[in-house]
Length: 302
Image (cartoon, rainbow, N blue to C red; front, side, top):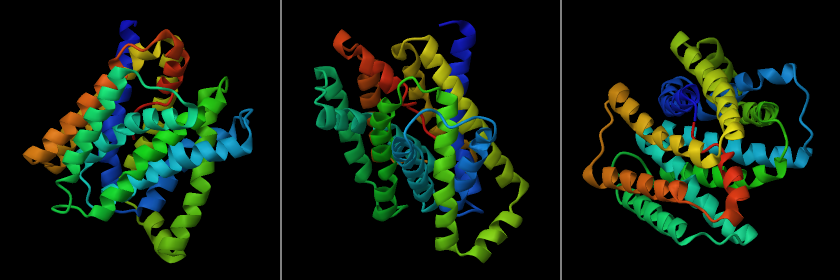
């Protein structure tokens, strides 16, 4: 990779890691539904200038509801209900585990022995993390958070049906499709009056966090990541996503003073090692096409 593109990949990973911190700050003032809706509304602004990509509405809605709405709403809910930011960034990245598993079930794609080993390692890490639940956040919050990597994985597989569609246009419209029902959900769950109060009394800090989440982390970062995947093999690009949980955890430690007990820290590191085994392993040539598509799933997170 060119030095400039390596720098872009690093900046995207850092941006996605910091997005977890920005989400936590915005959630101090906004409900998970409203915060996620505003994030997608900002990212959907390009839809005012670009046409809907040539993709069926049914597929567009399905991808949007999994890859974006389901993933990010459950993320926001988990963070808002006490799941630490650093831990959230690790759990979301476990989508690689679910993607491989669902691909095997849905398409009969048999994972390689090394991928199977990576899945087992990541699953062990998740079990270790489960052993720490109940001390600083509830089982329910963690269960909702687990919807995020599962939705992410399903969205990855659905994204295969959008081959040849320009990524920038596609993701802008995916954000628009997600934003509309989220606004309705915010009005129903929070009520029109509290929603209006949240919007009109939002602090400058929360507003800047939303702008960073929508314009930078979602719109610009996704576009840059897609461009890298277009220009380079996925095997060269996707490993940079492994930096996301490290950045998220480090930033959370600095900003919020987040600390991890021995078992939780060991579980988080085990998950990351499992993901590394799954991502960095050399795959058979027969799966090279699937590898590129897996890369285009944008293994990030925020």
